[in-house]
Length: 241
Image 1 (cartoon, rainbow, N blue to C red):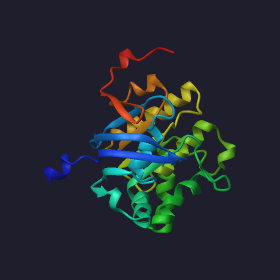
Image 2 (image 1 turned 120 degrees about the horizontal axis):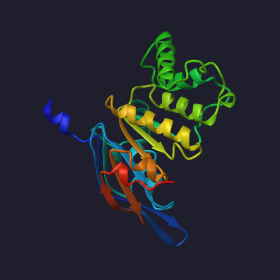
Image 3 (image 1 turned 90 degrees about the vertical axis):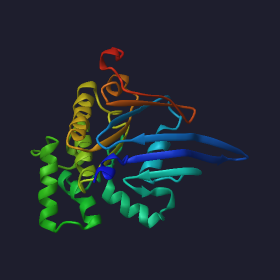
Image 4 (image 1 turned 180 degrees about the horizontal axis):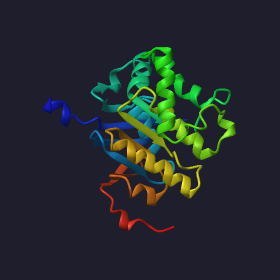
């Protein structure tokens, strides 16, 4: 029991990711070593085009490393087939995108049920009940029967978070989840992520918002495919807008 408690939920060792661009080989990740413990809230920062989103794609198994080892929730992703990765991702990872990616023809509650339909873990009535509870958790109990186009961007993002939680994954990965939101709504969404870590979820979030990043439990900065900073951040040192 004690051993499982100290096992990191994310472990990357010497991860390299390269792409061929014509006759040139481009290195996007250059020997990444990273360990994340369960319950941490990690903000990943750095200039655009320096490997942040590629790092998230490694952790979620969406993309494969050129070399190195990736272990997430005790699964060796670099050794898994696409079918295995797809099934694993549906169970173990909730993904939140910058542009929400809700299906426009489905209501918010139907969007939230969808990941449970894919996994088939609960019966139909239990899926519906869980989706309603999750939308209540993110403050959308009065909006759940509306289509995405009928609610605000902030409400769509909260619905996307509910959808990410549908199968109760231990890990939530978010790529610029507040990038299209105003300041007040960004704070609300960020605080929702913080509350998830307080109930045991682990959150990895890419952000360009330094003020939000400094409220995470840990900040990782990536430049030129390498981790150049990995530290706990003092919120009092955040740059004021």
